[in-house]
Length: 108
Image (cartoon, rainbow, N blue to C red; front, side):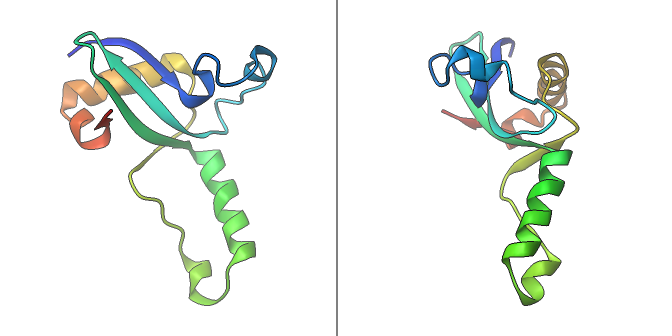
């Protein structure tokens, strides 16, 4: 299993104007990561940066009442320091090597 291409949703061609793509803060994202393998299959998983998670948790605290303030949940999300492409590639390659890839990513 070899990676052909990897990108975050914000980098999908045609999805956003080029000038907006330059403003993407990869250390502050909650996004889908798409992995295309050399066998032609594509996979998706949700990744969130630690900073973005903290921001979302604080926003959640302001919107809810009672015991809901004590927790914040998200289904099937990978928490990372940031989503810079060089580090993202290394993480996904490691997930493949360790056998975690099939548990984390869903086939498209």
